[in-house]
Length: 424
Image (cartoon, rainbow, N blue to C red):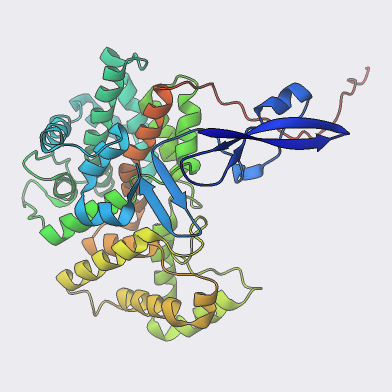
């Protein structure tokens, strides 16, 4: 990290500020010295503020670039899988064959949850949203593991890593089973990570579920493509909670809560809701006209991205996977999928959408895939949370292993100045 200088003139006074240059990306002005000058910066939404230094993930939204530890997401999606990417995010390098086998086996050895945790689900209403249940049960994990809570110890952090990554699919599948009144299904360690999740979701004691390899591969791709996305709202929430010294289970629960917001993790759910609202191919022109009308609040969900101003690099991979799943399941005649494919064609060809770079994003395709697999809309964000747990943990772990301070944002106060309480 090299350093230059910037000058800021305020009220006739010149202040020198360091300017840092990272390995790639924009230069960063260090404004920490402003507080000693009686000044703060004002940046609602932190859109121009680097809240931390990180070596994990880099995004260039203008060029459509997403790198994990320097590796392009397209290459990881083609040549790697979710658990190898998990290893990469946490440890910084791709594993050797021996280390990868150790990592996979260790994850498999932690897939079961404590039997007492099963009873925790009974405290929720049957119609509770699965994300509400996930917030509770993930936070509750901290009540079960008092043996390894010294998180200044790297070994204790590593134990927490395996417990979280291994148990998240089990807990998520239990949320689904509880919501539909079916018994919980125990994990099978002879299956891959993604296949095991599908097994726990759809198997029952009276009928085994044979996992389709095409669907397991698609599920693994969804996990991998959502594994991390730099300093977004939920990751920043995990870092902020962790800066207080909170345990990782509580921190991940806070990330789940932030992800639950429709502006963050609910995008693929919103895609399916929109397709259901359109309802029939004959109504597509009507909704396209609404999307083009600047006075109409309607937006086509799953098109464009706040960060990617050109294209979402994950969407290219997800489109190919979407085509494979729809072909394997014979969904070509499903009215909802016909609507989706027609919208995709319009977005890629219509001059209005092309000029505004409103291309289909990863949420558009992942929502279609999840519905085709048979996963209900209410579980979409839960699966996002499962996938993103490794990213959240990696950022928490990076912070805990470095030099950090408790987060304490400032404010621009616009309320009353001091006033006296009226005498009675």
